[in-house]
Length: 88
Image (spheres, rainbow, N blue to C red):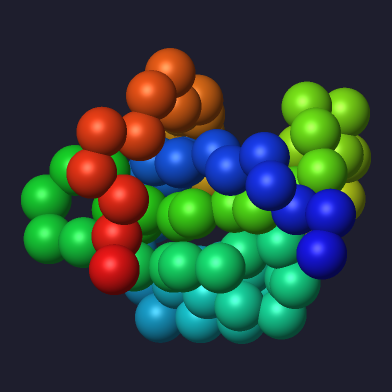
């Protein structure tokens, strides 16, 4: 509850070695804010769907989880303007 602000995040890692990938996946999988985590072929490396209360809570999420993980090269956050066709 209280997590109606969703952010779609593209993440790219600096390296693809087993330790980097495992640490990244374990850290984000533990976060209650992460409601979907996909490893992709190609670029970006990951797609993450994050649900938080508001923009301030998203900033806290980034600072607490994402920015503490070593070897992240790029984070791109997408904020929805309009949900044309919601997922079932």
